[in-house]
Amino acid sequence: MALTKKDVEHVARLARLALTEKEKEDFTEQLGKILGYIEKLNEMDITGVPPTAHPFFTKTVWREDKTYRWSEAGPILENAPEKEEGFFKVRKVIEG
Image 1: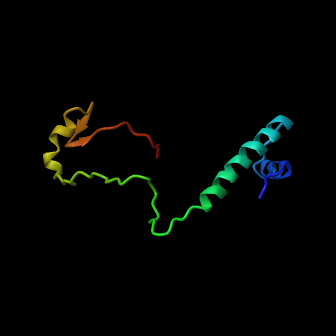
Image 2: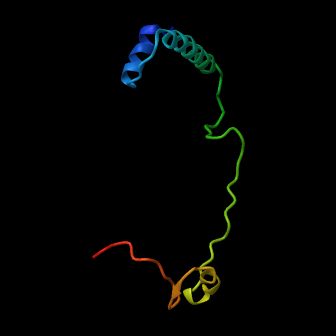
Image 3: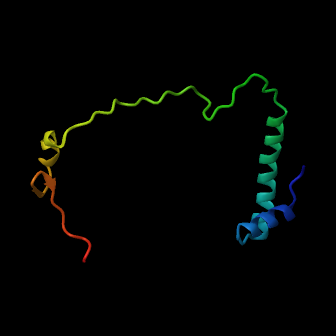
């Protein structure tokens, strides 16, 4: 399926893009090459190839979640500019 200048104009109109004549010609050529490459990929035999989201095997490394009692959170508050009764003290931001 060949891409035409009219197709590019239609897509540009849907995307609300104003293209110059030169841009329309360039995009027609560039998008045509992209679609041609996709057609080439569709000819590939992918029987037995599992669907993937990444071309390489990856493993997410997660650290173990640890819970702390608030009474043990002293080191967290050490760097707080202001604290009060074991909590961060912040300026009031809502008038009420």
